[in-house]
Length: 345
Length: 160
Image (cartoon, rainbow over all chains, first blue to last red; front, top):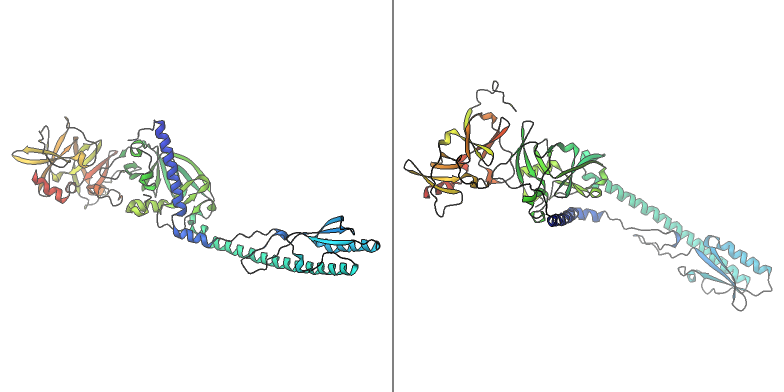
């Protein structure tokens, strides 16, 4: 029954089948429950990225769209319209810069110069400075400065409003995070997983599974004890093994967690077990191929399942290790009741 | 786990079981249901009989149907050999022979020493296993003979 896999082609087929099984398996994990999807949708927060003054702010609440440029270009032209001087001035300093230009003009009254304000494309100054193209005299310059001051005030007002909305948004995000923490992933974790916990990783036909150490009763080497095969049982029921005076049913784990159409080819013939994982106070033995290692997990390292109408044996998945976390008590119940609806098949 | 015979109590009834081997495992049938054990009996095949029916034998003038126990239990088939025996049982108002690999012994087992087999779901095919008993490091599988065949199958035993 447990002949080794010697054929290379069979190995490839086996691995492909395992990959398919794992893909399907995790697909099923991720999309198995509509309730999960609904919950996830409810928790989605529209991402709003605020890029200082250059950002176009669009927030879920009704907010005026503000397009702002951080710099203003001051161009000084001669009477022929040729640019003789051009200065990029930060918006916060533009009034002072304009004063400097005006002061320069006062010092040289004989020169007829025009000052042209070029706004960056995003800033529509026409809203604030209509019909200003050139300043032919000081009065016009002062009016322009006045307009710029008004623009600055308006801008500061908008920025303050944006900051206020940003703060409000942060509060909403915080509230959502708190909501997630109270009713989301963490609440689905069992009590023993509220702090760091250890799990034993083992594999069945390439599929990696994990069982929490606090639910682990022991590990036996396959062959240390004779397995008594009982007639008339399903192929997943491998028989009884005697351990410390107790007869423990041993089952083929893969047949319980993976649908039959995803088993490796000739699995029943080629399956080869090396260990037996004892769970549920040694009530059941899970035959496996390899015991990998014991790892420590944090609660948030597991994607805990919120609703388990199917595959109740599956507590969650550990993406980092690409493995499924077993709920041994549910697994035991599943084996006792033989409820196929909660088996992976 | 060794049984505490001194403190077993008066209600703990002693039972006797005829044990036999099948595909490396030891099975037991309650001695009350066993009529006799036969060896080197020619079995006449019956055309059209179910796969688990090996044929019939003439037992002192009576026709007795012989069941291939291996086939009935879903075990790998094995030809009749020198150690093979036919266990004649009486149950359900029927007399039937069970072909087994070999006969082992008669075991005395207290009722309290019989462990119920763990429930493994809704698989009815194993309902004929009455229990198990750990004995000298071995596991003895105790058979409820009347459940080896269904009522219809028992009724059909007369047809062969």
